[in-house]
Image (cartoon, rainbow, N blue to C red; front, side, top):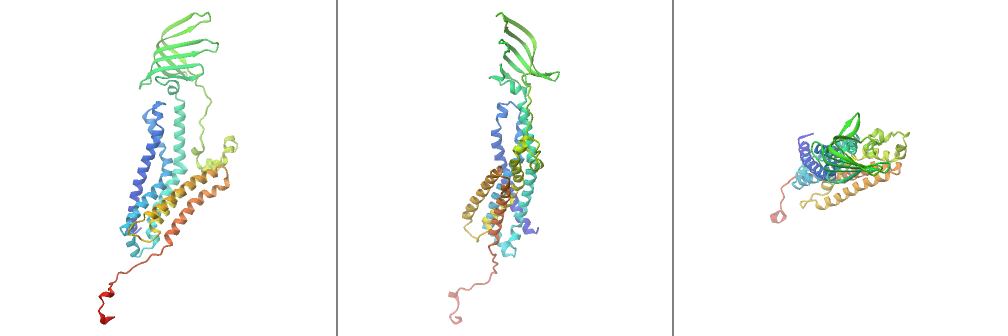
Length: 379
């Protein structure tokens, strides 16, 4: 790139990075609020919470980059055009392609980043989030006990605990268990801890007692220093970790295992998701072309380009909404997938057409003599 092109590239790169960071921070804040129950209800550590929020970044970045490019380009180019720096470029002999080439290079870079995120980073992070939530669901402590609440983690079982400290020790524990023969037994303990004995989960109760009515109606009371409550039968499950369509890699989307019933039923949706992964990065170039058209695609104006920017901004929003609508329609008809590429490419073509339909006028400054100042003899 020449010096002036490097200058234009830097003028676009700075606002793009700032807009991306601002939108990413806003999206992560919204995501953190929606996942706040991980800390409150699931009683997970702050590290798990931050892990979930951080893993959401690749998915968010793919949606944010086109918007950040569009907004940053409008801001940067509007300033450059209003301060007549773009006009100076044209007057200096630069073609329209040379003027917009730094912006298009930036758009290509963003497209490649979005493509890498869409094809590899996003499905990897989605799988990691799915695995984290699966581990949380399998967490015995969070499933069995909620401090200050009566919970029913299983049929015929009621559990209450006053508090769980940082060492995962459960204090003032109450357990009521109904037996298959119609009887019931109640356990109380000062503290308890979930552990593993011979590969099976158990609840170790300390300094407590249990009460049970015998068949003869006699209350049987037993106190102990330590008692092992078996949890293996309560938490036995055949549930397996299942990756959804958004968690699949491209080769799994385009070449599903049709011997699996679930993949047979969702084959069309998987193809739709695969084509969306390839088509969605094109919106970076489309949004850049539309932003360029809003500023450079018309005549120069000292009053600014608010009206053109508003019209193109509305058109860009329509393009994004139309893209999501086409994606939803492709979930039921595989032949509509071509439209997923047609929408961003049409927006790109429209933006470039608006830019190059204007002819660049180059003016040469000359001395201008007013007719009223011309001597009469010279007329």
